Length: 144
Image (tube, rainbow, N blue to C red; front, side):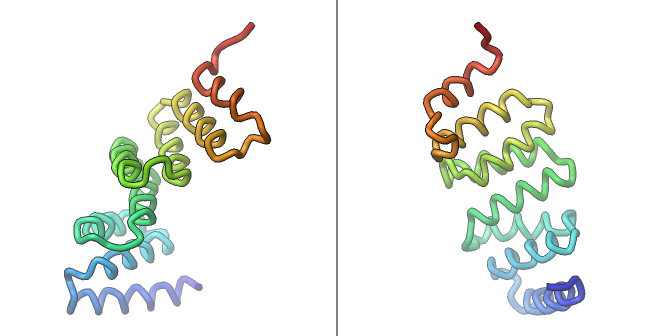
């Protein structure tokens, strides 16, 4: 979809929201559309309202909200959002990957790499080396 089409869609969603201010799905779609247009700062309150009102696709909302906060430099808030999302969707690989990026942004690179390694091993994405990768996730600095 072109930016022009996205802007038309956004205008339509905003007009509909004026008549339905408590519609969680409109808040969700407005947040997503702002993000797609590169308007991350404007997306934040719509993500918050979508979650507060119980929007569907909560996994997508948690992921988008946390990612948006990270992109605009609100790293600690992003981590808190990812933690809440992971409480609702334990072990979700997407949330974990975005959380790892936020950890990196806060200078917690070791923790980020360790969690990425655990996630890869848990999801059998390491070519049969799950046991070794799981071990090294906890012992990244070990040498022999």
